[in-house]
Length: 361
Image 1 (tube, rainbow, N blue to C red):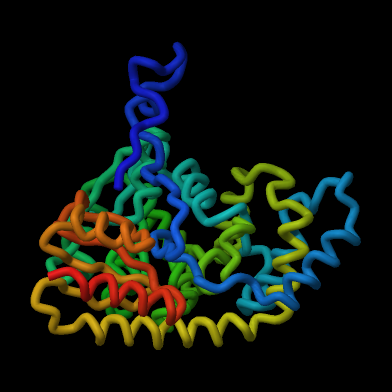
Image 2 (cartoon, rainbow, N blue to C red; image 1 turned 45 degrees about the horizontal axis):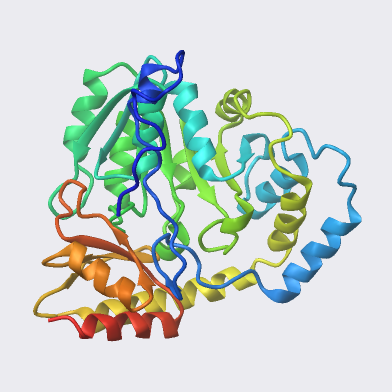
């Protein structure tokens, strides 16, 4: 699935930087269908009782006053939840914003190093901000090309290194020793451990951040927490690195309303684990149901999504859409020929997916 750029280089107003003119808009077109499996969302909304309490707190707070300068109360609560020094917590409206700010922090006039394929926002922000973008192909099994990445770390001046665990869009998780080896080799680079889906893989790389150096973990409330509509993400870092990153965060960037809802969620986090467990069970059930299919190959995943390799991604995508199911095409990405990315939904949604796929030869 592709989207035409909002503007072309020729149509851009005078004065717009060439780097911006040359990059297409974020490639996503929303579709209104009954079964939405295209954005790796939690299929369940925030629990009704918690939503009611969040709305009550929102209504009780003054809307005519600015929120905390740097979401200070929310930072304290996240620090308590994560067992972290609150001086090392940075909060923004979504982890996408943090990726942009990290590119500003250490990528401009320097290097952004990642793998290919990878999360498109890493490469998009590098291109928009004029950083030197270096991508190293994943191994055939989607594992990190550790030796090749270490060679690039030596070849280029320090910048930003992105390591995604579980990886997007493949759902692959690397051995802890491989991740640690790469992080330790990074030296003066800012190392970003993007852990947006870590609850589904039961992995946690906070210890690598605590070990010191220019390292941080990116986390989000959009996936396991089921709060994508609130747009909240955060970084866990050393106080020294967090202090530099915080300089780039606009003042008052998290609304009073979003803060109120997140406070309620952090007070009652038990629902997250229950939904993660269901997500893992459903992921394993769907992958098992598709195992051994003569035409399709459901690739292993430790996230809340998986890749489905098909003989014809366009035809399969169109067939599913005709059955009211939208997934995400990934077949234009290196090494992902024929692939669709499919999020894990509710049991009923997953049954609908399996039934629709069963209708294809």
